[in-house]
Image 1 (cartoon, rainbow, N blue to C red):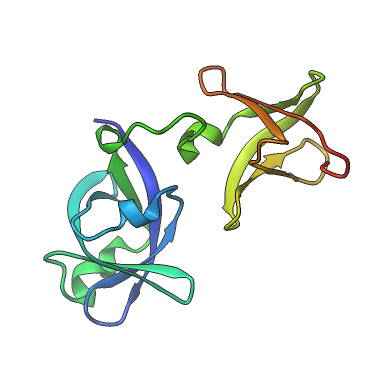
Image 2: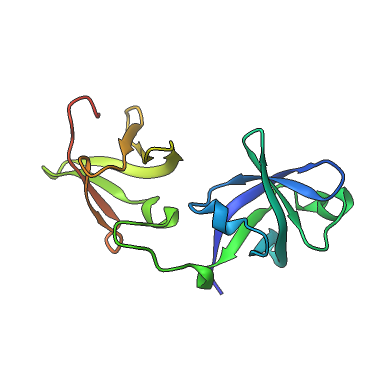
Length: 168
């Protein structure tokens, strides 16, 4: 079975078994909702967990899992990856992509110039911003908007952009 990482448990929170998670999920409201099935990668052993509660506190996602009711139950999972089964992925609408599909794509201009590789996705509220690592240069921030992103080919891992003035 294939798994995708949706976050990392970075700490415990309080004494009731909550964990602080740094999310790298594109749909965390769905991923972390009550009843969601997740997997903790505990030193290569997969531990199935069910989300009991999810809340945001000071910008961090706090999760509590069913049957893990104290800090002693979750302490050992600090530093572990939080996974979801690839079978649980839903079909997306046209021009919607999962983060794992975009990260690692090569970015080229409409003129054929290679810009770099997408290394991260930032959620800004209005639109996502793709961070592009450029060899020997500062990272480029590419807004995922129609005026800039002209084509996304997941099969070839290539994104074509129109360079607007001041973008790079």
